[in-house]
Amino acid sequence: LTTNTEKDKTTIQNFILMKNIINIPDKISPETNSITNDSMPLFIWSKINNAIAYDIEVAVDSEFKNNVFTKEVYNTFYKHNDFLVNGKYFWRIRAIGSLSNQFSNWSSIGTVIIDYINPQSPQLIYPINNIKVENIPIYFQWIKLEDTLYFDLEIHNTNKFDNLLFQKNNINDSTYLFSNTIVDTGIYWWRLRCRDSAINYSEWRMNNFYFLKVDTSIYIQSPTLELPDDN
Image (cartoon, rainbow, N blue to C red; front, side, top):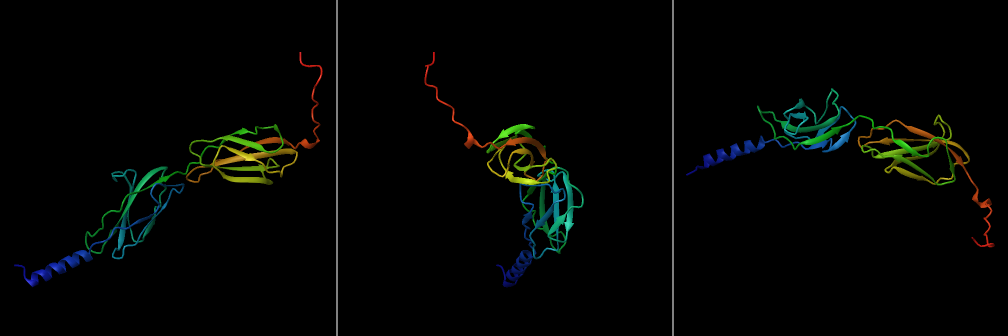
């Protein structure tokens, strides 16, 4: 038979054991599968009340056999002081208690992709350099590369691009139909740049074109031929 004293002792031991259990921190940032151009990303996790520190591990494999760094941290955030090269990284966190060898389990594994390489400039198709364009709308076209998401389009009336007449950002296609009537007859310069998913921008690619504003209302209608008949 189990005595009350033994029951009380077991209850106390279970209470102490439960009290010494440390919860697993929740990863906050970077979000899993996120992409960033920051080569020194800030890692953030939730606070655990009975933790005195945290272990963070960052590796290039999900089994953490090839660790980039392991760090004991006394805050709920950490920014590594060395640049991380482009690539995919795996990270996890655990809490450390005040007792010897007192750790929580590791958190679930998070992933972050670091990409700080600028994409290539887009290849412009139309209007090409020195082409004459008559009337609005103007159908701007370019080649969309695989690693690009959005394009920024600008139209200026100087080749120094210091007098912006029109701007359209975050175009997610390889064409744009310009129907604005702000332009008059003259030479114009347009330029385009692209942005990838990590918010890296390409260099601007630029062309010029001659725009001829034609008043079609003054055109004379062509006569209709009646006699003699064809053939």
